[in-house]
Length: 414
Image (cartoon, rainbow, N blue to C red):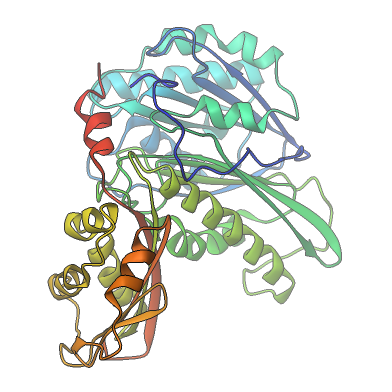
């Protein structure tokens, strides 16, 4: 699906947020013709020496060649000096040829930046099963290197789009020992969204000085509560990649462990950026017209609450009912029952938009069908379910399922 052929999601933000420069980060984009002509499809980022990196990558058994390359880079612990991303081609399920294409682009990008290949990170998104035309990406590198600039976050976000209808960005600041640090992030994602670590692609940079092990310890739980708590269609991408780069350009007192209380504000800001980006992905769900928040309480564990929430969020019956403005809470009951997690049938309670729908395993005496229907006919829908077996809770987000999803994916490769 060529970028620009889809109308902007009705749930899109009014404008791309202002993302200022991050000291130690330079960006450039180009149109390399990876799949389509005349569209920006390659992003190159350069990081100053001393930049640390943390990441979470897809657990898909059919992961892409760039994911394998990133895994080696994260395990190598050499830090990060560059990032090369292309859209239009996922370079997934491409065997040795795909691995060779990934290596060729990484080495070429490392060469133009004057850094070691092990410090160059990769990501690709787009069609699966086609080898990346590495020569087209390589041919664009000299121009990309010459165009590196501290600005350009919106252009970077647009370069990584596939079926996205709007560019996604977020920013936050925090203080570490009285020193202000900034966090910027961009993401792409619209379909094939049921992350098994992150989203399809997300890149975050900060000028804070955070050791890699500490950054990793902060990232993993934040990813669980943000990207790992969203779903559009229940399909996990072969390319899911979330990377966070810390340049250390802003000097503050050293931090050596994630539990350091001086990192509390930074950890909250990082999670806020990730959650903002994750919700933008849901708002841009293919064919979406509604954002749905699902809170599960009374579960035996946070993991169980999350699985129940995702069972509701991934149910085509729940999603199509909401698309049609039908407050069919029976479908929510069905999804709780199929989740495989403990739930007390005769204690389950349900709310829609804060309105009581069910209680003690039956319809609530004060249930107002007209009020519930009015809520689900809006654009921001909330569902809460208490399953009556514990004290744990979790929140997940999804979107409705419309015919637009079929329209987009029926001719994705044409």
